[in-house]
Length: 322
Figure 1 (cartoon, rainbow, N blue to C red):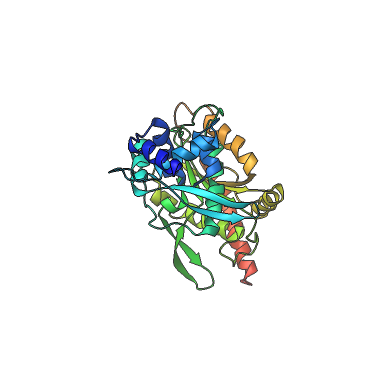
Figure 2 (cartoon, helix red, strand yellow):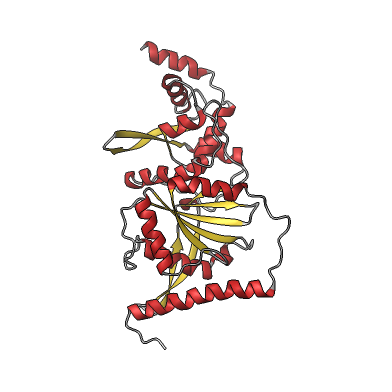
């Protein structure tokens, strides 16, 4: 009873601090964060008791103030129950205003428990790029943009070779990272290792994802993004064995590593230094127009991959190749 009274008295005069607003900003970007992730970001060096008190205050309706957080989500594992924090509509509005976010679409429903764990793991790629000193609350980076896949609306057309017709598809990466200084756009696919790699008939396989991205990059990418930034596909894995298997697939399919579009496989530990280097590199002083020889080289590289890719598909299906 005493604890409840203390909470109500503390919450009666609740004022949103800079830390509170920044937490709303992080959750607007990430949508879901575990208790450990929240404490790491905005309560470094604080006791669990103090952070718990503040989180409960922000999750309560106080007088005419609506709650800004909700902690009613989570997932179970062998290690026990993991609580996951998210924003209420009021909190999402605060986070959007804090960062000046403009999203193509905002999901109306929560993801299921199975994907909830996947979502917070995907956010580890982003959190690895957030400067943290372990003493002061972190700030949401402003020099690049992290967008979750469910915030995107990316329809495209893909030719179905079995049905012999164009099919309407929707690309939904796990996340997208935009780097304005270097005019690059990274599409992130977080590979947990539960899906097969080489079976193109299974929509969740790495091979099927690769085919979808190839169709998207050479088709509707320029329709959705008219800024001329080059797309990069990153498969991020938990283990070196999975990374190595995906790297072998990319090499086997001769998927480009540079040029008009490209792909590579990285572990989660390797993704942080790789992306940090890319984001911190000195930006070009000006965008140079490629010479005729460079344009020919780039277009030839992609054209060769297209030809080989198409030829392999035809051979797999028993279609004669001239």
